[in-house]
Length: 254
Image (tube, rainbow, N blue to C red; front, side):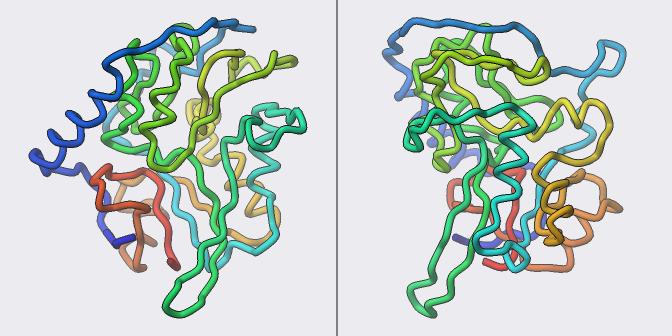
């Protein structure tokens, strides 16, 4: 991992071109498995309030406040989006998972939540053969379940292993979080809350409620936002910054 303190638009054209050639090759021969959509809905702002690139939504995770053994963010995400488990932890959908990392030199151990990193240059979007994976102007990366064919190229391309394939028939879905057997899904940064103007996510809210304040949501482009202020004042890291994906999720304390 390397550090980068200033969020912004990555501008390394050569690296970007090489990466796009690599990920595009993965999508050269897409297979088309069966698809069963359970409900149809979209999380989107009203037509009179278009999504704008004047903002870029992001998350800052303070690993020093992330408590070992706490899964409040995971539980809150599951409840918010009705991510029921089927007793198969290796394949059950999981939009956030907790990881434990150990520094081999010092022995220091940190716990952190891992979710879609909402990259400015998302490999999942590059390899998607149908355009189902897409990035909104405000930086949130989503999957359009209408046209996802479940090929799972996006799962292979994601360096964060942040996407899940839905193997089971889904019941009792939330209208703001449509899901479907045979499709791929991942963290939406609680786009329904963002579009409502809640200015928080379920994971950040739960973390605050648990007393940790380890997850902060905000506008990375607003110099006066709390997330921007903390990113100026603290060492902040992108996971796999070497890939130049310019992630919307940053970490401090690692």
